[in-house]
Length: 272
Image (tube, rainbow, N blue to C red):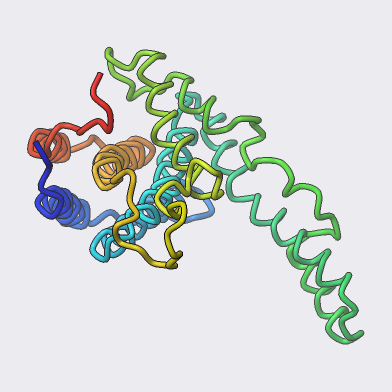
């Protein structure tokens, strides 16, 4: 039995609209950044998550499912970042992780400073760059951007597997590994354009090639997209409210449960 594509997308769109209204209704006011940097960072990541979702809906509306699916990797990354920041219940570790996230902006500036100085700019511009570097306390060193801001190798894999205060009793290692495989590893194939990520663009043998061929689709991805949206929008909100020290209103859980129950079960490409 086929799934009604437009209906499923609309159901998830309604969920996103509803949780956005509820989140706005909380009227959360970020505290002073110097003392409580998590407030601004977490709310910024949550807004980024909603922006990614809105962009994915636009892509789905015009039939670009592969591109919407690729964008889901960034949504998962928003949630994993928030998960990592709020993973430790130790206050010192919490602030250390938030500070490491923020300070990566310095490493990024050092990278661009290095390459700006390497490209034969004028003396006056070079002097201006070096003066601004002193103000920011940055040096001509591009190497720090080679490492992940968290200091972890395999950030997504390890952050997903390591326990979190919001993990429920049903959050087994197998379930976490399975979610990583579909929600992060597979979407990465579409981000990086691996061979497995261009299946829907491969031409047929002995058929005149056309750049855009609406019939050349081997796998529909919209269901994967809508399920990832449901799961990770909810996760971003949950992690953010936890880090803010706010109790999560039941309405967010109710909206999530109702949305999950309303969408059709995932249709496998191949029957077992």
